[in-house]
Length: 165
Image (cartoon, rainbow, N blue to C red; front, side, top):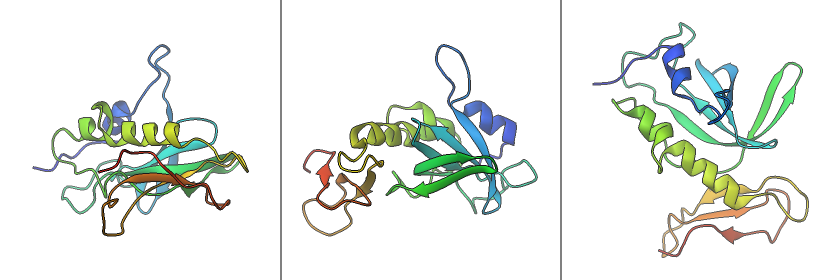
């Protein structure tokens, strides 16, 4: 059974600061027909989340859309937030089956926590200072599925951030 939820229910599941209770996210707007959120990791990088909640404020009744999240570089401008993807997703989507909050945010291996760890391991490029992208190896072979970082501007910045398989 697919969970349906409101915008308010979704936002109440998003992370808040442990001490102050302040939201660690901001509502970016509606993109691709659904509400989008930015969970800030630091001043350069965040996690962009497509919520599956349409303009009506309620998620779709069917499984046509699921929750998606990925790392982005961001800048805040007067007219909103500008983002650019920084690599691979942890998974293609988080299904809206019961327990989606745990799979998306709360478990140690949740999508948001995994992306957070990837960003912290990747850091910024030592040459240019831009955030490094984080990617999953797709080529067949012994390294398929391993996670690595590289600067999207500078050559020679490749680094594995997961152990050998």
